[in-house]
Length: 392
Image (tube, rainbow, N blue to C red; front, side):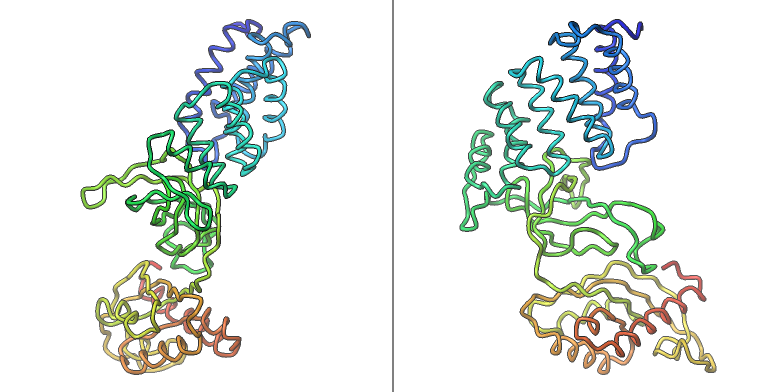
């Protein structure tokens, strides 16, 4: 390929961009990814053109559009360059619907919802009701709280939608979906096998309100931007489809948090002797409280260690089977935290066979001394685990 031959460069750039678009937009690109090579090739060709040719739609305009789309796929660091390239392309052809659609994609993935709406609406007015344009317009309208416009887009897509009292689009009867969110370590070893400093994805279940937004129905256990009860917006194209109980379940990338849930989410670690003991805690808590268990590790440990004496020197008794359990208590905002604390402590005393550390409960109660003791108990339980070789 000659780097100064616009037609050859356009074809190569198109192929590289198509390859780059197979990479999920919520994942970081590898160095020297296809998108970067396309952006560089388009710029080199543009640099070789005369000002007259750079102003022609099918030569300079097309090269600017290729470069803009390549830069769009390269993330936030190249955002200003991508916007400038789109401006240059559209200056040569303000009525090119496809370029307005692509500009809408850029704004969507940067969370600029008014700009995303305006670009998608312009693409629709120039190019008609195509499915990609309608979905992106519905995403932007939902993010902006324009439920009537989002519902109209769904209607144009053949999806029966209405608008609720909050002014948001509603589609009844949709099954649960999964949404993946970026996450880092929680500061607790319970977060999983990935290191705390590593960026990973965590998957949550969501009860859809429409095909594009819904309420998070499971807690996150790492340090993630969303949690149980939040209302979130996701992209229309799934990054994966898994099979769960014989049903295909799409997994979508997170786009936006529309509303924070008002629930209290309290991380805990526990030590139990029999499987499911801490699961039964839920029935003893005030109404509406939920207990979610993330992981359970089994090991045989000293009874006195398990009873809370892990930080005190003592004669170790014969080891008994214990399970180290990580999870979260989710309490509705109306639940009195004192009542919740009393229920947790009362249940722990009654059981006598397990230990539970919930430092965030006491932090929210303002009991700093007890919160410190709970953090110490948490570390003690994990020291038992590490000493016994249990992965935490």
